[in-house]
Image (cartoon, rainbow, N blue to C red; front, top):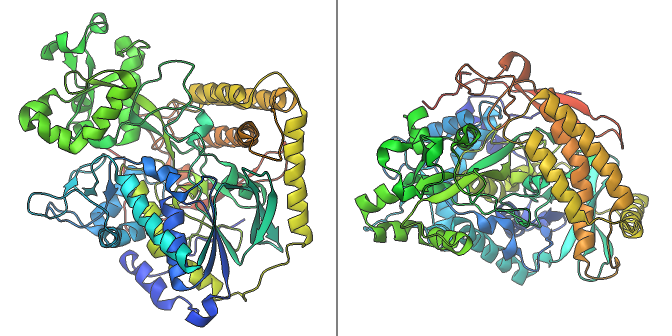
Length: 638
C-alpha cells in the first residue's frame, strides 16, 4: 500500500504558506453544523479543542482525569523551543528545523519539521498573550536557555514548571469555550474504542470511570491527543495513568502505527531504588546547562562520598567524548554514554546504576541564589525524594523511559490513513524522527493544537457533508458490545496475580531487550516472552470488584492487556529495523567508536504497521523519507 503524505509541492519554506493559501474554507454559519471529538486534554488536546471551538465548531472533549489540568503535560519541566533569536546568537527558523531533523537522526518528514519550526515563534506570542509567566531577564525581556542538541539559547521557560504554566494557559482558553457552551467537557471518561463506519472514523466508545457506564458518541471527525506509551516499560517518568490504549484501539480499527520502536530514554532521572517503585521521576534536562555529569575514573572510588573524590580522579565523560556540546549532548547519546560507564563498573549509588550531576562549579561561578532562582523547585523535589541536598553534593541520575517518537501514522495534514481520524502531539509520529530534542515536545503539542490542526481539519471537513450517524448504528452497537465483553472477561478470570505484577514483568522484559541497547537474539527472546506472558495474563490475572462503579484495578488491567499486545509490535519493529538511529540502538549496527550507524539505503523510511487480526503478524508498510533540502550525513556532536 502506498502512503500518501500529501506534502504540498514547492520550496520547503513555502509549503505551509501555500497550503494555507489554497486550503478549503467553511463559512462561520456552517461550522456549527460540524461536531468534532477531541480525546485528551494535555497541551495538544486542550489547545486544539479551545481553538476549534473558537472557530465555531461544536466540540466534545474527553479525558479520564477529574479535570483537564491533570493531564501529564503538567509534568514537563525545562522549557519550550522557539526560533525567536532574541539573544541574537544566530538562531533562525532554518537552524531550528535543521537541529530537529539532525537530532532525530534524519528519520522524520522534512516538511513537517520545517512547519514546526516555522510556527514556533507564534506559540510564544500566543502564550505571552495568555499570561504565561515566562522567565524574564533584568530588563523585562523574555529569558532563554540552552537545551540538548543545540549550540544556542532558544528555550523559553517558566523556572522548572514550564509544562504546568503552558497547560494552565491552554486550560483557561478551554474553560472559556466551556463557559460559552461551545465545548462540552466529559471528565472521568476513558476511550475504549474507535468506531469506523464505511472506512471513516465516526465516533468513539467510552466508559465513565466512576459509574462504569459505557456510552457512544458520534462526530464528523475524531482527534486523538492521548500522548505517548512510555509506560509500556512499567517504570517511566510518565504519570501512572498514561497509556497506549486509545491509539492502540485505533490501530486495531485500521489506523497504521508508525515506528513503535522509536522510544526515548531520558538521561537525567532519579535512579531506580527498588522493586517497590511504581514510577520514576524526571530531573529536567535544563539542569545540564549548569550541572556537569561525571563518574569516578577508578572503580575503587565508586563507594566514596562524591565530595571526597578529587577533580583529577573524576571523568566528565560527556565533556570528554562530545567536546562541542559537552553536557548538552542529545538525550539518546547522553543516555548511552551513562549506560556505558555504568557497564564498566563505574556507576554510583546503591545499585551501581547512576552518574553524578554536579553543580559545584556553577554555584561557585554564579552564586547559590542564582542557581536557586533557576532550579529551586527541582532541587527541592530532588531532596524530598532522595533526602540529599544537591546544593552541597552532586545529584545522582540515570536514564529512564520518558518519551515516544513513534505513534499513529499521519500525513502532512495530521490525518491518519483512516479518513476523519486526526492525531496530534505525542500520539502521532511525525516530527521527531528517532530521537526528540529537549523542549520540543511542548513546541509540537501547541503547534499542532493552536496553529496546524485548525487549518488542516477545516480543509478536510470542507470536503464532507456535516451530519452524524445514529448511535444505534450496527457499528456503534458492535463496538459497545465488544467493550462490555472484554471487561466482563477480565473480571471473570479470577486468577492469582494482579495486573500490576504482569505489567512489572513486562517492563523487565522490555527494559532488558528493547531498551537502550537492542540485539537480534534479545528481541526474538522478548517476543517469545511477551507472548507467553500475554497468554498467562488471560488465564491468571485477578481483577476484583465490578464494572458498575469505580474500579481502578479494572482500569489498570484493561490498559495492561493492551500493553501486552503493543509490546510485541514494538519488539517486532525494532527487530525489522536492522540499523541504529537515534534512540533505536542495535548493537550489531554501530560505528567503530560505538555511535549509532544508520543504513540510509535500506531504512530511510517510516515503518507503518497495519493490524491484521489477533495472533497474526501485522503488515509493514513504508513511507520513503525524501530530503530535498537537508543532506543526509552521519550525525556527530563531537
